[in-house]
Image (tube, rainbow, N blue to C red; front, side, top):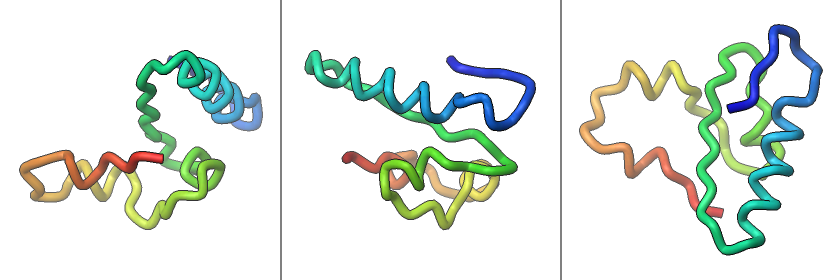
Length: 71
């Protein structure tokens, strides 16, 4: 988990680069974007970020399969 108290310190950038480095060794990596104010991780990997964490947390879906988006 990567965290800090201020925005703009590179959390998304570092997380994405560490995840990419781990995936190069054929390990599976899961990114969970929980930033409620300025989500950027989806933009970095060119995914549609129309539904955020809050939308999915209050939804009535039984399965999380619709949330997992392979690259």
